[in-house]
Amino acid sequence: MLSDEVIDKLLTAWRAHPLGTYQTWFLWEERLKNFRSIRRGIQAVVAEMEAGTFGTTYRGSSLETVVHSIAEQRQIFKGADHAFLWKPKLRIPDIYESPINQRAFARFLSSCLCCSKADEVVAAVHDLDALKIKGLGPAVANLLYFLHPTLVAPSNTSILKGFNALTGAKTKLGRWSDYLAMRASLLRITELHRDQLSNDLGAIAGFLYDVGTQLLPIPQGGFSEAWEQDLRCVATEAAAQAKFRRRTASDADTHSAIQGLLRDIGHDLGFQVHIAINDRTRRLGSGLLGEGCLVDLSNEILAQPGADAVRLIDVLWLNSAGQITAAFEVEHTTSIYSGIVRLLDLAMGVAPGMTQGLFLVAPDARENDVRQQLARPAFRRTECLQMRYLPYGELRTHADAIRRFGSGLKPLLAIARPLTTS
Image 1 (cartoon, rainbow, N blue to C red):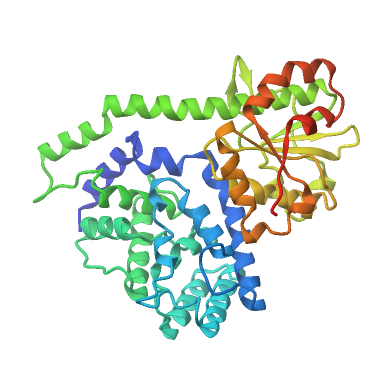
Image 2: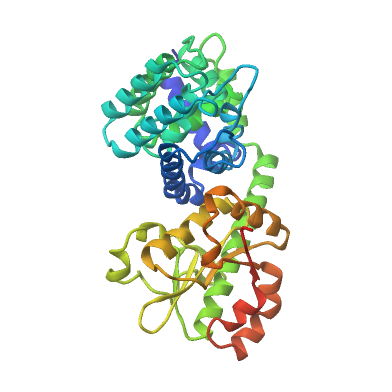
């Protein structure tokens, strides 16, 4: 294994690398928004499998919806769906043709949803492994990570390569025993380097991913000045850094600009406005995105099921009585799935019976993406909620007129496009 000194230098370079997972994924504000929506998706998978309504295919299933959302989590989870695709010649993963295995997988996920301690999660893994269901190996850890990020680390080929390169181990892909041994080592490494690694195991997994993909060079034949020079070069890739910052800044600025526009329209129409709690301190123009907005939602709202997710909705409009009248999820480049789930948390938990005022706001070119997500079986019952797609172009074109002459939700409903699942 590399010395603690070398690992510490690698971690320093990793945290500064403009293209590394620390800067592009772990610190990505949208990352945290996805934990609750993915948990809800896994609950849906369990419910369907236990009820016998899951079906016999991956494509179009609630499991595909969840795994697709995970695979959208930038490069570290790219290809996360490969392990769950049905491979008929190998008959893996054997949860589509075997109802018994399907229900066993549901019991495993249900156990992990309910437990809160590391030994309980590990025990559930051992129970699953003992069943020897083909294809249900450590790739399943990518689901568990979004349930227990401080207990379970993501797993894929690049992470495994990084672990072996860092430790000199010969861990093999596809074995739960090897994964659990790797997990124990990752917990020790995280504890030893607590000043650079979060207790969220996504951090150490991201680090190993960048080592495994050779984004970060590791010393060959021991520590050397040449290797230190390589690290300095990695951390100061000026051209790549400039390109990356321009791209991410543009995305963030556009997202915030749309939120700001919806904020201003809401105020002009007489609504109180709430900005997502993780966005309100973003700079917008000469001020902050959350200026002039509600500090938080009422205690009555916060006491309802799903309130934590609702506080992360990009923009909320509330009437004078403090009731949520409209909700806007701005999906510039992020997962449309997670935005839909947050709106569902609002309509089915905090504001049951809300049948209008739910808007997915996205670039004009993403309309098909929005419709395809709502067409998924997991959302087959959302038609009654009358979600609407509000394209950037329509919002910008009519914003001034709405602010000057509009009243209530009527102008927004006029320019937004109805979404149906039929």
